[in-house]
Length: 113
Image 1 (cartoon, rainbow, N blue to C red):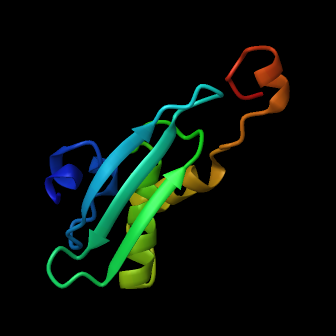
Image 2 (cartoon, rainbow, N blue to C red; image 1 turned 120 degrees about the horizontal axis):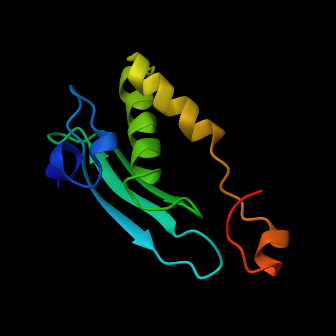
C-alpha cells in the first residue's frame, strides 16, 4: 500500500519523511465528473492517523483525493505544510470548484462555467 504513493496512482500524496499507505479509487458519475477517492493511514509503522477522502466531481482518486489526504496528514503530524511545492498543492486544492452547475446539466454538459 505504500508503493501507491511512491510510484503508483497516488504519487501526488507522497511526503518524503512520512510513509503513507493507501488506495486510490474512482467512482463513476453519470451526472458530471467522476468522484475521487483515497483511503490511507500514516505513518506506515505505528500509524497515528487514518483518513478516507471522497471528493465529488473531482476526477481520478490520485488527482484530488490523494493530495487532500496527504495535506491533512502533514498538517496533523507536522503541524504545517512545509515545502513550497506542497503549499502550491494546497492552493490548488482550495481553489478547485467541485460543484456541477444545474444549468450545465440541463444542457447535457458537464463542464463548469
